View 1 (cartoon, helix red, strand yellow):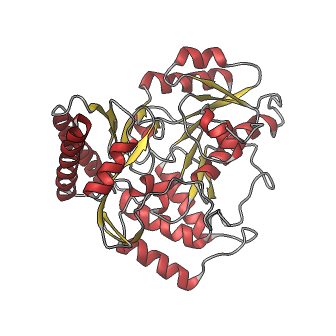
View 2 (tube, rainbow, N blue to C red):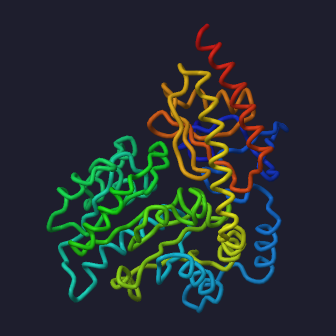
View 3 (cartoon, rainbow, N blue to C red):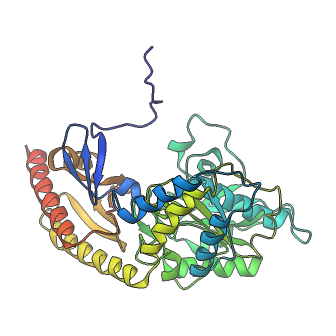
Length: 398
């Protein structure tokens, strides 16, 4: 048998973590890594956070799972917290970001098709080039990236792609079958590409004018990552539906679809479900995460740390003009744009200097530290980045 027991769909590196300590990972062979990847923006509280561990342990001792056929005091409490913290009136809990986006897609379609006064022909969502919404059949269909489509035809119909930040193109794409827009305020996998304020506000205006649903995908940018609880808050508009995951569980699998009462009008009994979604253990994890992150003083500190880190990176990269092109991002959602494909440099930082980062599109290295870093971690990061760049420049010149 040549296939591995773990289906070989990931290009796994040689780092094999077995333990985490705050902002560091320790591998099977004892190597220590500064974790500025955070499980791709998941471990918002770092590793081995006492509050998160305690909440999960306490809940596991009481009740881990029951069917959604029964009432959920745990889910009701967390949903109310999210409603109080956001634009939303109602929440559906999932197990992942892709599931949250799937629910958001269904919610946008159901708004038109499951309502007595809706237009049942409206099922298309306009999405944006270089977006990433997940790996299910529905969410890869929502993305224009052909590399994710290959081998999975036929795709699910009902999506039209236009350029990100191009409001005129978005407006021109609206037709009689349009149900709404699906957009990331900050494209993570696409390279920390930030939406223009006029673009997002323009999408809101188009939705209001044409009775469309505005869905924002904040799976990666949300839960404090961009410096506010959700990134949409920085743009002065309110979405109809929002998909969230990653940081909301702090490492425990959890996602959610948030919606206004109007947008959720088609999501009645029997329209959607999840066996594990909203289980008591996941709810306890999220409560512990919100206890830390849903605090303006904490978010203000995230913004300040993000500004310090980004400022130091900006000052540093001028030393290597042949390697680096620029820095972008919000909060602790930062991208360093290289002049070449970033994956070799990501591997060099990891293997030679014990620094974990994540490659993205547009030749960008994503810097996604735990939101609980302090200045010592910023210093450690800059020391490792500096040493890695110096080595890499010498190797490239050789």
